[in-house]
Length: 325
Image 1: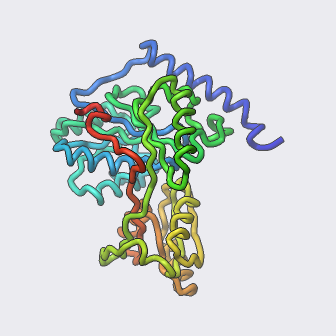
Image 2 (image 1 turned 120 degrees about the horizontal axis):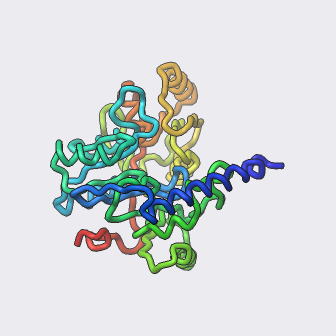
Image 3 (image 1 turned 90 degrees about the horizontal axis):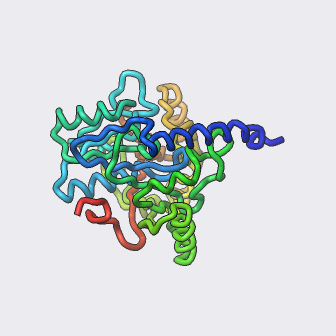
């Protein structure tokens, strides 16, 4: 019997618990709490790897361009002891230096605090699709175009946080990692997802596209094409390191080595020293993700960082799509 098969009974129990929980919110048995400003939630059905952070970056940029003053609420998963922000929060702070953020498992209290202390007029709930205690005005669901339901089973046998029926709560879907798919494949996925959602829901295909190569500590930004032919050692602690590797290889880099650690890993000085030593012996430069870069910068580690942005392949969601126009 495979591990997945042995875990199937536990997944059945977990799915039942999540189903009862969702029913409790839908029937009003479990209390929800509203806030005096609009709340836009970004989340997914699977455990990591669908591109929520690039989506939040895109959304914050759009909202600020519309003249809004958004704040970000997050649970703060993987945050180092004593830190105010986790990797994603630090990345957002680097992209948007004056962005108000609070990471607190009690996102209702955190939202009230952001409104009171920073006079925000809109809140973005990061990784909030399953956090139903806080009422929201729009649910944005990120789904990987190549594996929208991952293994098709809920935790722990699969990758789903809840059953596929959860899609019915979504107001808008971003079909991430759609690059490389033909138009008919994208349309097939759009029809399938609308069928699962039980409604004609707006679905926007998009991809995570490299936008720049930045050298740390000097901050010099180069075109991503400059990575072609350069010898690199990859360092990553993200949900899907294979996606980072594939992107780097597609840009023509010469991969000399790779160090993969679990998502949100806090690198020790000894670990970083070992990585730098390996890179030197290989004649390679250390190349990492934006999430990892914010941690390495605090340790004054010289490295390259590949910046990634969300780019839409067809039309781009606008203020009206977000319920703001």
